[in-house]
Length: 429
Image (cartoon, rainbow, N blue to C red; front, side, top):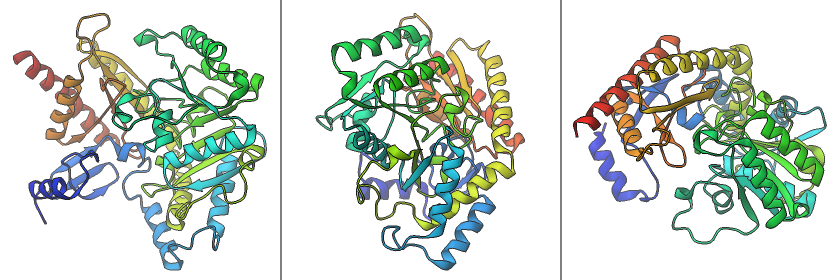
């Protein structure tokens, strides 16, 4: 097997520079552990960026995919449809919030789900304006970038599509109260954008790339009332927060607020590429025949995996497990933070948790270099972590919902050791 240094050289010679990578070249994985090509073992607190809610290679997911592969691997749903797509759509219609008639379309990636939701909203309302929020992440396509509220994903790509507007996301830690966020949204709808030109408002119940900022339930309720008042479609982007990650099936469930459309991907199919838009029948059906879909949309192997994932979430009571283990993580890290001035806040829902680093009101409070150093220290110790936040000052913890408890504790100990080591190195520099 080639060494990591050899693979890095080949990657630099053959792969686009704009494709960001780490130097953990995976050889095999099991549940919450990864082994690289040189045999080094890692605890995985990234889960493929919140994809592997049921862990690497869950036996039921692998069995479902293997069984489907014996029948057929592709036909294109537009050409020769298959029953498993229908069954998954029926399950998602039942699982998503709202006691009304629903329909589903399947796609491949999260941003495809987002773009198709926008298309549905525009077709249904006959309007073109869309409101997203600061700190949002909705994907890397042109429309996805336009909706995203983080500049680093837009840099160098020129003008963004028109009719996309951003309002502040409530973030009291960084000086934006919920009242201020509401007022700014009201100002937008008075000064820049006629509400009767708005097709949709799209929001993550817990921001992903933006820093795991949790939308206050009262703010989501305010958006619901605003959408009802002006005939606007409310879209819940559940790509990262959905499918049990927060301890509920969907992040919006914590607020008791019902969106019109739900986009999902990541945790839906246990590592196989699949996304979905589920929502009110009249909105989903507004697009003309042929206006939705894709060659690989609702791929049979991914659909089989998704059915198994939904079974595992229920059979292993993973939502309750996410709630319990998430509370343990926050309790431990909040205790650690009492003796660590560099930690600004510990926050999260279920197994979607984050630690933000910095000091409120102090000069040089933002320290993305410290976050990068902690992640590097963790990697050396055998723990995979990810940064997030609009200024990359947040570390997110995304272990599989199936992670063994002793492995979780080992990973948290490595995280704490990495913080201590990075801070010591910074002090000595």
